[in-house]
Amino acid sequence: MTRAIVVDHAVKQFTLRHTWSIKEYVVWNLTGRGGELKESFLALDDVSLTVRQGESVGLLGRNGSGKSTLLKLISGVLRPDRGQVGVRGRVAGLIEVGAGFHPDLTGRENIYLNGSILGMTERDIDARLDEIIAFSEIEGRFIDSEVKFYSSGMFLRLAFSVAAHSHPDVFLIDEILAVGDEPFQRKCLERIAELRQAGQTLVIVTHDLNLVSRVADRGIVLASGRTVFDGPIDGAVARLRGEG
Amino acid sequence: MKQPASLEPGLVIPGRSHGLLDVPRWRFLLSLLVKKELRVRYRGSALGLLWSYVKPGVQLIVFYIAMGKFLGLERGIPNFVIYLFSGMVIVNFFGEVFGNTTKSIVVNADLVKKIYLPRELFPVASVWVAFIHLVPQLVVLIVAALVSGWRPGLLNIAAILGALVLTVVFALGLGLMFGAFNVLFRDAENFVELILMMAAWVSPVLYTWAHVATVIPDSLDWVYKLYPITAAVELNHVGFWIPTAAVAERYPQGTGPLIDSLPMWAGAALVLSVLWLVVGQTVFSRLESRFAQEL
Image 1 (cartoon, each protein chain N blue to C red):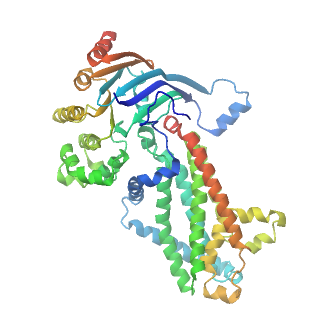
Image 2 (cartoon, rainbow over the protein chains, first blue to last red):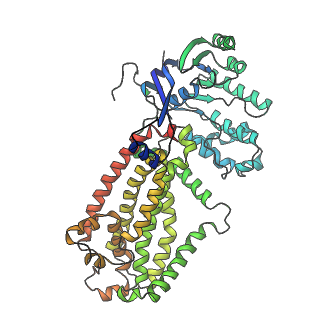
Image 3 (cartoon, each protein chain N blue to C red):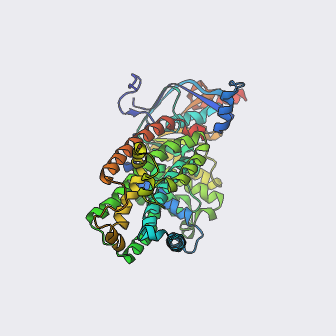
């Protein structure tokens, strides 16, 4: 068994600062530190899990349960306060649609920018460019115009298409399965199923329980920063539905 | 940090980088980030990059008339406008690198928060953008110098390159440090603006070293000379101003009114700048783990 992702007793605490200026900070220090300048909450409380290579895992839970924080620890955007996270190979995916897109660049330029942000080399992108454009269903005359003229649907389709062709070792998907119109959504799901079949390690965060039960084998349910269920996806979905 | 038993070989800790040393591996993305930055800066402008030539050109003419002729500064300093402009190019370059690197993380907050990349990419992209904006100023300066009978030797060219390297290293070190501070406290941006406002006056751009030497006590000479931008400005004077016709005539020995033992001071300033870059990178790496949650 090769482990693709290891999260070992990870703890992540967020500090909510109430101030953003040095002046306020200095005044607070001078006035004897009265009152709380900071407030903290535990986003992840001692979470451990292992994902094997080729597994497709759904991370489920209510809003604020720590799913996205966990995903960010895995991608390296955040680091745990305590505990360890380890990953094998290149981690990439759709954390938020279009994070790496720039409205003043053309569709084609955005493919290169976003592709390389996701860790693809220039040669990778050259080789898959036609495939990416074809998948996004964006017409030829639009691909060389600036992305700010795109409809929101076109924008999302292009973003998904780039990520879906980036071939990372671990593919993270955060709440973006509801992309575009219905035919395109179906196509996205087919693509994810294809990747899964090809042995791609997938971690999917979503609130869409019907959908996740179709694309994941295993489900992990988080509640208040703790793992409360880890098992077959149907069990995880039942658990969440039961909580209602 | 030691590798815990739970992580077998092949598993790596995400979000760890080797700082600036990682940047060369990402040069393709770096080039795209630079292109994006330039595109954004010149969007919707018909003349585009041409503006970068017009501005310094007009500036040079204004200085020539107002300071050289009206204020009569060209009587004390031969080819005053070349003296002034070769110093100002360095100060502008310093300002652009330092100012933009300071803002670079906050400006790219969307990316920093969502996708892990070596965060040093953003400051380094700002450095390249600053280089591209330096080119038009250098072109204007070279044209003006040629008109004034500029005949540089190899050493003069080396001095120009030295001035640029010194400025970049020092400004990037400062920029990494203040760019990281800026994530925690946006006051850093204002503080940097204040520093940059002073930068134009602290270095011998509008006056010569001789003016300073008569005022500050000898025991404090070294502070002034060790300041890397002073050394860079003087090196640029060696590159552009010293080998022009009128200056060569007035100062046949070739050093002019510049600081004495310039090579030594420039070397010391370079050592200081490299150390500063290491400090800046260290501070940046320390604070980096908090970027995504503080932005």
